Image (tube, one colour):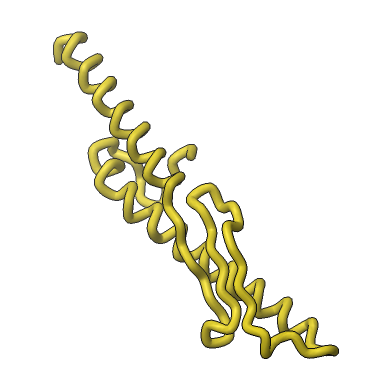
Length: 107
């Protein structure tokens, strides 16, 4: 059995790595787009909307539904990219934790 002080040091080191990874994840920014780039939006690592860009050609009376669909599609694209980036960032960390694949960290 390992020395308890060694286990505590390992736990503290792992906690420091988790805290660092959490800060990196929160600082991430991703951009999603739809309609060939006519609609672009940026999300933070905390899933907050940071920016939205709409091409002026989309501002046509009676075409509101198309614009709404493009905004939703751009958001889905950004969210998917954010999730992929976060999973990639956590791969190295979770390898040492023995976490099951697909398990999401609580942050």
